Image (cartoon, rainbow, N blue to C red; front, side, top):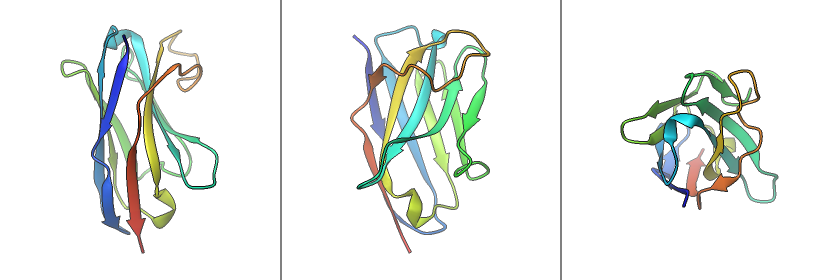
Length: 125
C-alpha cells in the first residue's frame, strides 16, 4: 500500500523559511516521481514542484522558482521541499503525491495517483 506522509508545516513570517518532508512507503521509491502541490482556501490546487527520483530531474512552478528547492533522499525514501523567502501568497495546505515514472521526458507532474493528507503552511505579513 502506497503511503505518503507530509510534515514540516507551520507558521512563519514573510521572508522566513520552512522545510517540508514527504516520507514514502509501499512502493519502489526510485521508480516514482514525487510532486508537491498546494491548495489555498477558495483556490484550485496547483502544482509546485516535482522530482523524478531515478533521473534527478526537477520541475518548479514559476511562482516558486528560485525560492523553493526540491530534493530527494532515496535511502530514507523521503522528498524534501525547502521553502525560502516565503510570501503570504504561499499560504496553503501542501500535499505530496506520487506516480510511477514513465520516462525522463514525460511531464513530471502528470498522472499523480497517490496523495498524502497534507500539511498546513501559514505565512504572515
